[in-house]
Amino acid sequence: MPRVVFTPSGLGGEVPTGTTVLQAARDFGVDLDSVCGGRGICGRCQIAFEPGQYSKWAIDSSATALSQWGDTEDAYEQRRGMKPDRRLGCCAQVCADVVLDVPPESQVHRPVVRKSLDLSDVVLDPAISLSYIELPPSVLGDAESMSDLVIAELLAEFGRSVTHLSLEALQEVHKAFAGQDRAATVAVRGDTVVAVWPGYTDRVFGIAVDIGSTTIAGHLCDLLTGEILSSAGRMNPQIRFGEDLMSRVSYVMMNPGGDRNLTAAVRDALNELIAELCRDAVTESTVSPDDVLEIVLVGNPIMHHIVAGIDPTPLGQAPFTLATAEAMSVPASAFELAGRHAQVYLAPCIAGHVGADTAAVILSEGPHRSPTMQLLVDVGTNAEIVVGNAQRQFAASSPTGPRSKVLS
Image 1 (cartoon, rainbow, N blue to C red):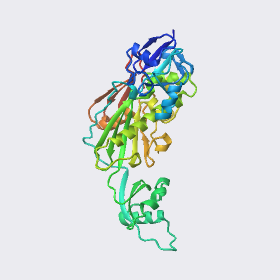
Image 2: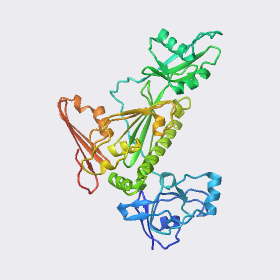
Image 3: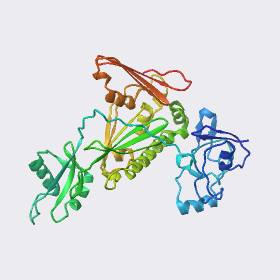
Image 4: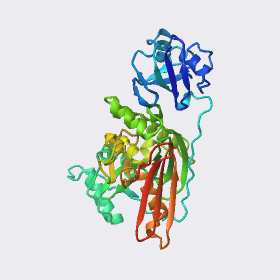
């Protein structure tokens, strides 16, 4: 009989050929939702299916491990829409050994993921500044462009030396200053105008995200006041490719294009998180992803490489060589993230298995500024320990499961 394994729970076993995924989930106590009684109406029993080799369970899932797409699924897809890798658990039948993922929205008891945030003793020094400016009326025959006028006004009124407007700002500048008073608010990062809004605006937003091996947690912040407007989290969807980091690296090694699957999964989850943070923001006006100008991402080295679209396989074997330990600063579009004006800052790694999340902890807690020894411990799916003071610091990393230690 074929064997089925459900992630992230790891539950599963053998079932008769032709058993529906929903029935298999019920047999093994898997948390898979269903309201319509398996008639293909509610769509809550959706599962994610990705063919490939899963060494942890010694399963090679072929594209034919589930039955073919049926009329019921076709009707539901046309009516409600489904992601490309999704199947209806009540329709898909198990035909061969297979590993299936139950996404958070299909779980009866959805996980609530939260990580607290302490902003005490934080001195605000935002990279973004806002300036409200009014442009002089245009006269036929003037040779100055809109960007010339904006740059000149910023220098005259605020002493800000700006060299150019970003493409996104140029696409908005005419509309923003189209009012009778020709007034708008511009956002400046460095020597560049990165966004323009009609009229007066005094709020600008940023998002901080910790991409953990198991969970992804984020906070939406007001960059000018430091206020936390919303917090949200979700399970890392990469779990369906392997519960721990080495399993995911093994998946990439054994499945051509597997790194792209992992990257797409985490980027989709980040976009969902960004949308949720904006939707739930505690503020007088609505917040759109296009209002977010800064996104900071941290994670362990494998998460760091995967979200950046870098092959993580060298981190799966000694000497655990990073593609880069440097920080990255790129437009959000480079990571396929929402926010047409946003700049993504991917924090630097420290060593082969001590990543950007540990660098952020060090920056926050400051052992390098301390005259006395400090011990910092982050216990997750992967654990990091930092000990040190202002003279020197040491860092180590190890899986928290029954695997051999990996020290960096």
